[in-house]
Length: 254
Ligand code: NAQ
Image (cartoon, rainbow, N blue to C red; front, side, top):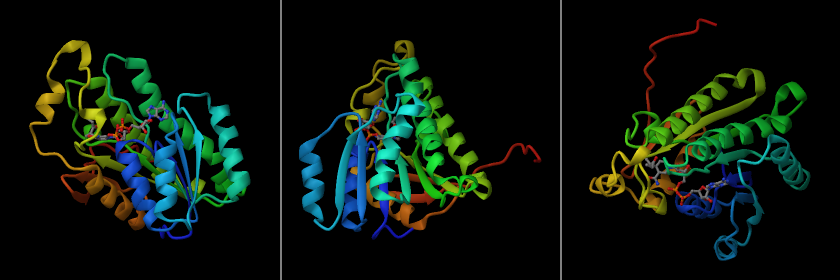
């Protein structure tokens, strides 16, 4: 996909990975970047606008845990304004295994609902033009950080959902791929709760190993967007971008 002149919706476009990725996207010159996030950050939005004055940047507050109908309403407002949307990025995530239900609601249900809502506008069976979904999952969806089993499972679920959506593209016209960062230096991994306190030092231990910067992650994110490969499972780790080959252990046969 060519970012230049496209219309992009970025859920969680103001987070650690989100903001650096928004910056890289804006540099590539889309027509519109619509940033949705739980909390506004006027300074960050102003900075994005200044980065490339040709790009129209709009912000709407959006909590991914709202009911599906509310998400559809917000998307209608956006579609009424933009007419077409080329790419939806779902990036909302929390890391706190003390908050089981919230973790599933944000990391999994939020991704599922936002994707489901945009199908109202994109589904070719409804006369829609199709579209592209990029879901930020995690390498913990490949192999868990077992000290945070709830977070890891929520990411594995988001990854599984994304690969199914990709396989349904011939029916819906909507393609999808997952963006799976490795450990990236953001507030998310600075300090967090393990499940039932099984490892109080989980953040510290994790950060003893090599990590990547948000800029490295963002630059590879833009490369993955440009590659636009339906069904791709991208690993963005240690400053590299690799497509993962998923091992098949079973096939439904249908
Ligand atoms: P950060 O906390 O900065 O960003 C999280 C974003 O989600 C923010 O924009 C926040 O406002 C938004 N958000 C949270 N709850 C929301 C809600 N209810 N509604 C709407 N938005 C909400 O963290 P980050 O590291 O920039 O994380 C961005 C995404 O990358 C998350 O989905 C995160 O799970 C994922 N990710 C991060 C890392 C990492 O190391 N930083 C990794 C992989 C994936 C391997 C590593 C991990 O899985 C962490 C162990």
